[in-house]
Length: 574
Image (tube, rainbow, N blue to C red):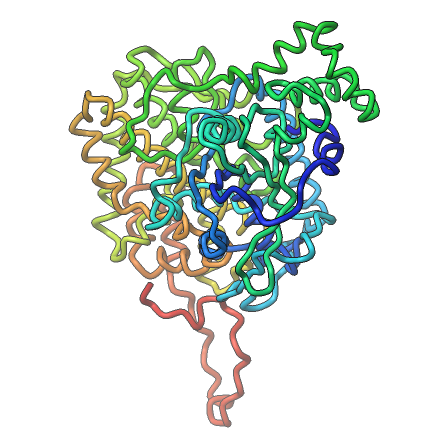
């Protein structure tokens, strides 16, 4: 959230120099967004084709942390949010509405299709770790890669150097960062000025990512270091709560001068005048809400948003904030086609709580203030049957297609076909896009292609949610039923986040369906879907070749133009 002007006011009291002490505690979400911004420098920001790949983001994260270690700094902890308090609901809704509005603006700006990027822009690209210029935020841009934060977390968890330091915590990362340096000393790296309000103890300090610099030799990192105890001493404020009182004065009156705010903080003017507001304000930092009702076993690794729904499942109105996808605002949310998979995941949570969860409020795109889209959760009695149905579909696809990678794309098409039929529509978007691919007319810049890609991403991530929630349920000591175990076995080969379909590899992923009997498999498992089999059979029908012209054939063959088909140069192997 940040306190108005607090960081700017305190900058004259910070110390620039080599970062000391050497123990770094990193605000994980701030690190992820800092890496994303580094990867955006010198890109065409209006083009999703120049967005950083998950591989580039992960590689750059490790390179940045390795540089810090090379400069003699110790990475003590990296904390990621695993639960946000209910007090943040209004702020989260406001941000989601802003992001949704930006997507609508991006769509209007590029209504006829997306901006292509420069060929090969992301291939083996090197990113400056400590650039002199920060990336510009001007212009209408697409949302960032939907799963970049959990992708970075996965990379850290798999790293020899950072796995043991990385945690998804049952609360806000900044709270755990502050608590660690208060108890052990050290420097918090963040982009959030809220850290200045926390009690960091006598040896705690804050450095902002944007203030960090590295010398030419790459041997020393400097930054503007905000040492809470020193700042309080210079301003004659109480070391325990002086900065929080100062921050509260700025919240009460954002237009107050710094000198006036300091004066009022010394006498605790607004603390006395507004005790209720101060109590609500300070509870964010002294007694933050955490999700500790259901302990998560250390062996179970959950994405932040999945961790939150696991910890919220006993709430009266549990909510799931889904990753924001680049989809078409003129169509139903791309999350809709995979809703039944998430419904099963939510239903499995009931086996943990032991009590019904009637609905989960899903937050997807949001055009106006809302309590989310209510998603009905099946009763526990239907979990076995629903799991068996999904396992049956997955098993059929696994047996039919030749390559494991084709399984999940084929399932994504199936999900779209089922949704289209249930909505009483005629032609699924997936089959339209597949027909374009077969006809060598696929336009990856079109909103049709982009939206179906988003549906595929939603299906993959819904399966990841299901997989992680089943792991959590199994860790609670009750184990999984036979049907859930079989389904869990099917999901063991679900790709990692970097191998999810993206705008860069989407043509190849579609080709997997076409080349690996995915279409014939779909005709069998969609046999009970009205009018779908003829459409699938039409896609598989080879096009009639034009009649030969004897006169033309007797002449020299004409030079054929080079194909623009994105599949033309693809190897059949993947």
